[in-house]
Amino acid sequence: MGKNEDLFIRAQKTIPGGVNSPVRAFRQVGGIPRFVSRAKGPYFWDAEDKRYIDLIMSWGPMIVGHANPEVVEAVQRAAATSFSYGAPTEGEIELAERICHLMPSVEQVRMVSSGTEATMSALRLARGYTGRDLIIKFEGCYHGHADSLLVKAGSGLLTFADSTQNAPSSGGVPQDLVKHTLVLPYNDIAALEEVFLKQGEQVAAVIIEPITGNMNLIKPLPEFLSTLRQLTSQHGSVLIYDEVMTGFRVALGGAQSLQGITPDLTCLGKVMGGGMPIAAFGGKKEIMSKLAPLGNVYQAGTLSGNPVAVASGLKTLEIVSRPGFYEQLTSQTEQLMKGLKLAADTSGVPVSVDSVGGMFGLYFADQVPRSFEEVTQSNIEHFKQFFHAMLNEGIYLAPSAYEAGFTSITHDSEVIEAILAAAQTAFKQLARDLK
Ligand SMILES: *Cc1c(COP(=O)(O)O)cnc(C)c1O
Image (tube, rainbow, N blue to C red):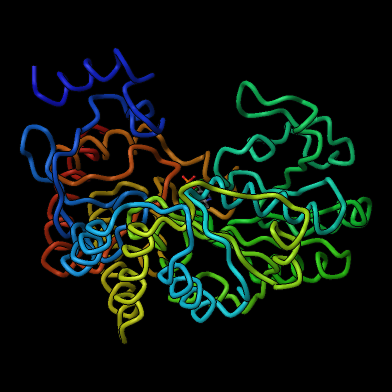
């Protein structure tokens, strides 16, 4: 028995499922999760000292590469002066200023410790600001695990006037909470128009992943976003862009800078902490001033604005702000996607690809999907076989067909060539098994 398996068995005795976040357990793909011992640049090593090229990068945060020397130095310096004070620091102001500068829709920002806290707090704020209860989310979008966001619709989406149709997608979530959440299909303009026509005056907020990364990568249609912005403005509902994944990953100014949309509130996480547990929500000053201590919407955190996490975030944002960073990241990612598509085509395996900045989608389907329904039609069996063939070759993809992939600036041509060589082997093997 290998060391990874040893650790997995041991972990399951004291940690439910052996993991501290469910997808890590390899349930969709089967097999033994790799226990990481260390990482550097685009690589990590598992408990058996096998090296992998990482295409998850901690689900996005490690955009400047693992153990980036500049970030490590900044974190070490901060750590040497204690880890937490529970009192304000100058670093928090610098990080807030940098975020507001990079994302002009964010006039004020509040720091929290996870993306879940950011979306949960943004919703409470939107409800407090509007005095309304109803929120709208889109099918297949993930916004962390706050109760009112763990909802997916029943199949009859067009009967959304009857919101009791929504069923929680998790145990432990009361139906009473879920009735305030409407779920609509992503990219469906007609559904959006209909719900606003019927219930627009009750909608506190619409929350959206402006480019989704939690049902694989799905891009929004420009008319869908412009309709969304127009309807929310017209009805006084707060438009919340959940950029926890896309912020500083798809572009320096996030998805909103690529789309020319100004949301009312934005949620951030992942890249903004460079791998440390820090996240944020921010937006219009008029809305943000409803937060305690100024307003009556309560929100707090013992470790919020943690100085070590702030140091990591500040240095990471400084590095990504350097000229040419996103051009290089985008071009490397495109090179990877082009090569993967070519390798699949050569072997005759139906695959499509898409990417934006340092985020990519690899779909076992003829066409790039545009909705949750289309994503779920991709071939999971093909994905599983490909996943394990790649893992065997030392390439670590997300262990689920419904997750996006992530590159870093350290995924240079040499690293990409190594991934593509492995992919050629994996696709050939898959094609042989399909015959
Ligand atoms: C990861 C993610 C979250 C949740 O962030 P956590 O830090 O895991 O709580 C929320 N929204 C989106 C879009 C995410 O990708």
